[in-house]
Length: 284
Image (cartoon, rainbow, N blue to C red; front, side, top):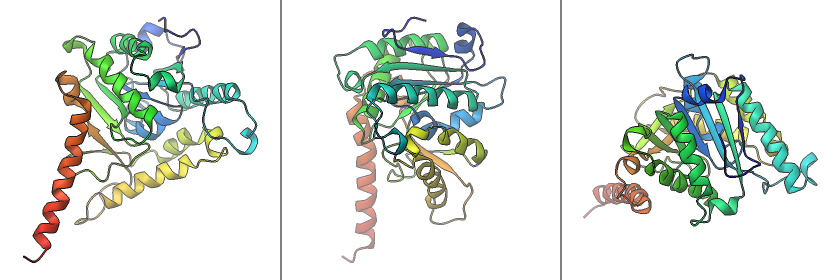
């Protein structure tokens, strides 16, 4: 497979031939940065782990060179950080037994530029080769511009593919914004109660982020546990870990839907729910 950037790479952890590694993919995640896959798509990783009939493939769109840094990484150049983060992402792919890992290596500016279609074209090639049933990406209400840019380019890529070859499901997951604000009817909860050791290991390999000043490992596992407890106010906990997502599948099925208007629908339903509850409990 030939990507648009010469520095891009397709890594196959078990050494399988590239065509077969892509074709066996059932679950795929498309993320902005190294470690986003492990934060937002743990459900897909766990569902495919140690399975012969289900395989997870990850796609990291940017090179991650501009990440904050401290400790031993404090004086690393952007190029050194890029290489470290690529190495860490490959380690996670080995630990999680991914079918394939695509490192597209774009600068964040490319993702935030609507006119740059290189990432879209790479994603089209990957989607057509792998034909995953389920795809995870960033939610459209994420507060990180690059994350939203990745989701928008992924939606464009999916829409370029013939309807019969598109993913059956597309989910927008939590990274730089929780989704517990959504109405319960809109939330898609993914149960990630099992294999906490594996989840911790997948997050823990990103030392450049953790020792470098961001405790994504603790924050991510804490959020999953918080989601499990706060998911319902009127019953006991049914899980010990939840990841919340918004269902973006309608944007795959209907090309006329505007992504901005679509995500505003979630916000409007939340707004109406809050307003209705207050009105109901306020004396007239």
